[in-house]
Every structure is written in structure tokens, then in C-alpha cells.
Image (cartoon, rainbow, N blue to C red; front, side, top):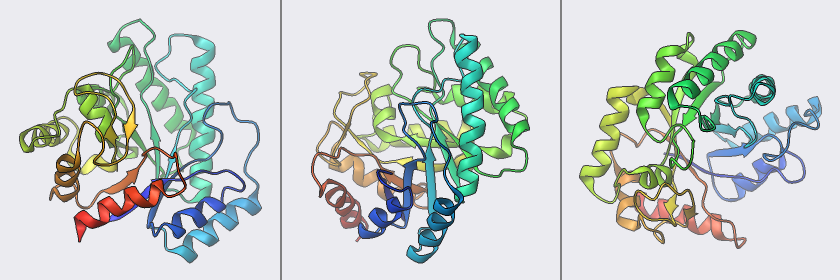
Length: 280
């Protein structure tokens, strides 16, 4: 299994690889820049080359970059919409320069218009972005959401609608967040509930398009529509659910990334140990 955590890029971006390696990871996820700000600086060529050198040295098999929170391709507000398209082009180019395999993104908020209108805006923006980055083969992964407010992506029919509207389907994939799915109404505590989720993904977008799984427990209740992650086995999902997700034969070849809380230095190591104990 390819297993890793979301790693801080505090300091130099290539130092994130040191942290992932120290935890025994063969995969990792990062923000390539501050997730709560618009881009301030570009990565230097020296930092990019050092990132690639350390990745090869440590044997990190999959690098996932997560887009920042500010961008919103479903927005009806023209300034934000145009600025978000520009940011996506920059992020795809930077992920490509780093040699990352995947760029994970939320599908945005339709901001109290309609889901259909938000999905149309999102798909139209992706067509523009893909045309501007036609030489790049970093796969853009659409992450599911818990479904609060006007956020798209809580139902995989939204993903299906975007796949149908985007010209360059080979550049799209799926990222499944387990805590988000649980909060959106998929009861992953039962074998039947997990199979329903997997079957929906298979039927609507194809399981082969599922590339990354954000393996998180949920601090919030089933079908709450609230997004708050918890340590593995200590949330509302629980250890039995985490075990059956990790052990499911249709998921075993996916990239698993943990986005569990970071209150103490050893939190990541403890959560990784939960997964490794299940696999042993």
C-alpha cells in the first residue's frame, strides 16, 4: 500500500520530504503554498530540484498537492472566478515542476445560486484551465465534501456531471475523503454502507478514476454535513470502519493519505501505526 500523511511545508518545501521519510511514508500530501492566501512567491528552481532529489533519495512513490482554500471555480462572482482560474493554472504548473502525480481540489461553492449552475461554471473553468496547461499530465482529483452550505461534491452525481462536461476526461480523477463521505450520509460503519459508496463511485465515474483516499475518522455524527476530522478509531466512524476501508479489496491499490489532527508531535506516527497494524 502507498501510505502517507499531509505534511507541513513550513521552512523549505523540500523539508516536507524529510518529515514524510522520518514517518516511514512512501506517499505524502502537501500544500505547495499557504492555503489561506493568494500566491505571494513562486518556488525557486533550486528548491524544486532539491525537492525532486530528496524524493528520489527517500523513495516517495506518490506526491499529492492540495489546492488552497480560497479558490472557487463554482463561484458566480466574476472577479473571484477569474482569479481562481489563474490560481489553478499556477498550481498545476507548480505541481508539474515538482513532479507530483496528483492535484487534489474541492469542487467549490455555488454561493446560493444552484448546484447545476455551479457545476456548469466549474466544468467550464476546467476546460479553460486544461487548455492553458495542455502539456501537463498532473491528474486533477475532485474531492468529495461533507455537503455543508452551498458546497458541491457531497454526492458523486456531481462528479459524474463534471466528467461529462469536461473535454479532457483523462486528466480528471477522484479523491475520496472518508470523513466527508460519512458526514454526507454514507454509513461506512457497515459493510453494506461501504459497498454502496464503492458501487456509486463505480457506476457514476468508474472506480479506476479513484486515485487517492483521504483516510480520516469523523468528529461529527453520521449525515451531519459537518467536516471535522478525528484520529483514526477515535471518532464517530470508529476502528471497525477504518479496518474495513483499509482492507477492502477494491481499495487496496489506492494511495492512502491521512489528514488527522496534529495536536502533538507524535500524532501522525500514532495514526500511521493504526493503519500498519491493520495491514499486519
